[in-house]
Length: 504
Image (tube, rainbow, N blue to C red; front, top):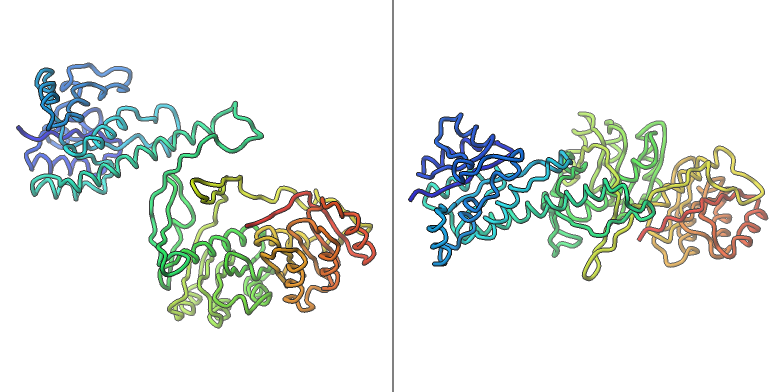
């Protein structure tokens, strides 16, 4: 008896070519709807599922494949005598290959795009992969047809196809759950976290290594999602490592969060060691680099403008792991590609995820993504003196940078240039001391940002000693009065944002 293949696909890419190769190998074809029409129009013999089952098409094709002659043929255990007897009694022909891809729900999120018959056939075939091959990806057609042409699918191939099939239906169901969450009008607006999280992600990029060379790393993309990484073009350099991606993501997000003016940031170990805004992108980079030129060695540079030749020439003199920008001039590419190990990324703007997740033992920590909610016009002036417009611009800049630095952090800035960053300290006084040491006098007349309140006035006194004339902090300490008194005594302006921005 000829082998029987059931073909029912939404994406008809390559389906007639696969059908032709199956016919050439002596297989019989079973199909339905548009797939049957496409195969028939190609001049190939095919039996419609409705004719095969003897049941009419009804309910707008919702139940066309939900029939014992379909699922009995897929699920029968060929080594089970009882199953074989049932097939014979009910005149059910075994189905040896199921080729199905589903309605594109991830791109058309609506009720009629929720496929029922398709996932049911896929799961049935995948369950019975000891006897049945299941194909859900047109990219596999050629290899499957090649192996069938040489005899039959091997057990290893059927298992691999089954694994891919279950991953396909799992991702499909996860997408539907996400849609139901997104469109739930009864959901409590005060609780933005879903009751359950169903993650489906595909490995799309193998990395040079993980955090360390002995670790293996890869980038995975959530099913149905698209990120700037998918469109980024690497013009030069070695393959990216785990930390290259982590740091470049931090740099690209930060440079786009600082506003529309020409901006440059330098990232090291996921923290900015420099950031600046200027009318000229080359000058912006020079000022960002000058914040901490020692830490910038081996760092990641991100700019929000096309890289001109002049900027490329400055970059070429500094050991840099990655430079990411929206575009590069031809002259800049020529200069930068001369550095064979420099990774040059041309990329579109990033998006901001709704949730952030981190692995812990047995599960995940999940939270809404941190955003700067209070704008500068919503800040509260806590001192006798309000900041000047120039000070307010520096406070806003320093606050945005501080929100992206590992806590505890103090950021000192002048003329929209970070001049000292104290990151990741266990106490705020040390963070301020480090920031002041790095500023080395350049913070005079500038601004200080603290990502959380000053628990004691000594943290503020460090900023005063560095020459800052304005401070931004969340406020809310039991010693706020002492801190405000110290600020008034020094004649500096201090504003409270009402929100902190810890980063761990």
